[in-house]
Amino acid sequence: MIPPSSRQDFDALAHAALHQGPRSPRALLVFLGPALVASIAYVDPGNFATNIQAGASYGNTLVWVVIMANLMAMLYQTLSARLGIVTGRNLAELCRLHFPPKLVWCMWVASELASMATDLAEFLGAALGLTLLFGIPMFLSMIVAGVITYAILELERSGFRHLEQLIALLVAVISICYLLELLIAPPDWADVGRHLIVPRIPNAHALMLCIGIIGATIMPHAIYLHSGLTQRRIVPRDAFERRRLLNFSTIETIAALSLAGMVNMAMLVMAATVFHHGYSGISEIEEAWRTLIPLLGKAAASLFLIALIASGISSSVVGTMAGQIVMQGFIKRHIPIWVRRVVTMAPAFVIIGLGYGAGPSLVMSQVALSLTLPVPMLALIWLSCDPKIMGAFRLRGTWLVVACIGAAIVLLLNFLLVAQSVGISIPGLPSE
Image 1: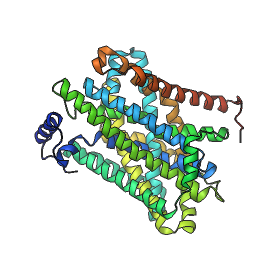
Image 2: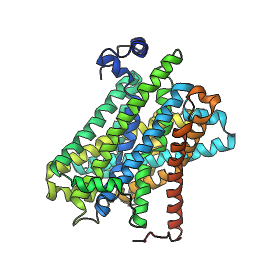
Image 3: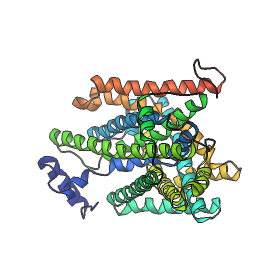
Image 4: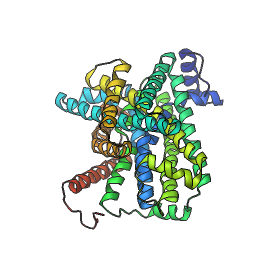
């Protein structure tokens, strides 16, 4: 992407494209950015962990969960972007303005916990990739990952387009790596297609993985972030520009999350192809990498780690950005970027210092994310329905029903997980 030379040039090009239509690739590219940045949350190391474990344990059986979660993500990210464009405010700010103060504080605490769980997965994933690829100690890899992440965040000072470009490049790296992985280990596409249209959850462990996949796919912080990225990026001057901008935003969101969904599906079917027959017990990223070397060769194993590092670094950057938006929106406070990085990295150092493996921590962090996911989902639906907030662009009709069904599915799966955790048997669902 070639950015306009200044903010004034960017605004002029954007408004001209809104009124006349994008007459060149350069004009079209002004609308490309927010959804790409948000989409990196959908291919973070938590996705690696849950998809690898799901594919190794159950083959292609749970591929329908990846697609369902991705379709739900498209809807909620589109709603988040619309909220920012129409109101000029982000989701966290609107929660503070329209919800009772006690509820706002509870939402903020839940969102901060979700941010910490998010950064745990992203940061550990990047560090683990560096350790395995270069053979350096995990603690040193964590420090290196932290420094790289902070350096990329500082890039935003030179303009938001530079950061958008870098994130887009990292998304491309992840996508290319997994395309090459599928060429090296072609899956059984007939079996993949069958499980896309026949939903099945074999047992209680598969249920936990389903919830982990949803938590790794529909990310609470990405829902907050997308509204923040769109709220003042291009400010429409009239109703016509606003409607055109919403159309461009929807197209970008569908395109970006379609790419993320294909990468997620590639993760799961690659694990199903390589590990399910003979290595179904694989549950950790490190195990998967070590097993890939004799099965597919060092090139495939290296591609796997390069994708993991690109995913961990970029998603950690995006997670920190989301954390700033959440704090500023809910409680009108701002802390320096380096302080937030230190605070959110601390749990990862504690976990590794206590001797816990990165793999199980990654999966459980995604389950924790799924448990906090209803907070932004329900708030987004509520605010998007309000005609006083959204006016003619409010959520209604079929799309309102679909959004409510999506939230109900997440709530139901979370209830089943809690019931299973406290020893309540679920009819028709074996424990193993």
